[in-house]
Image 1: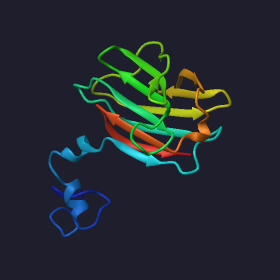
Image 2: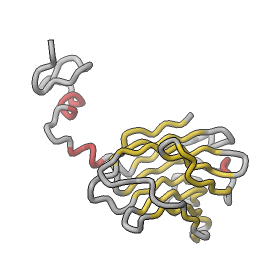
Image 3: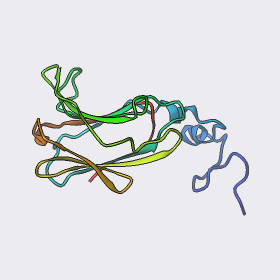
Length: 169
């Protein structure tokens, strides 16, 4: 039998029951999806060569910019070993570092592999030399380390996006 209106496949109880999560999932227009950033994940072990960070989401129709920061602590103003910043309003993707409150020289990828209203899947892979950004199964840019990856302690995602998944492996 097909699920009825207001029920969530794979979740027992359906909408209107006592489980608040099920009630959130059953909202007709789930505004909470638009409010899931900024998102921060602690990385107590840091990052080492071979670590893969996967970020999957959706670029909203009116998006301007979003970012992924690999931070050296969870304190405000922390150094950022990587600032990955798709700028749909400028049709570019900026890569940079923030060290002792000062931005380094910007690097820009070739073109803009993100489109408003479309999902995206980004892999940031720690290699021997730097962070390799893979977007839609294609290598997009290799950003050489300016800050050792072992100093990274948090991943932060924010800006104009609907975040679907952050996975570290």
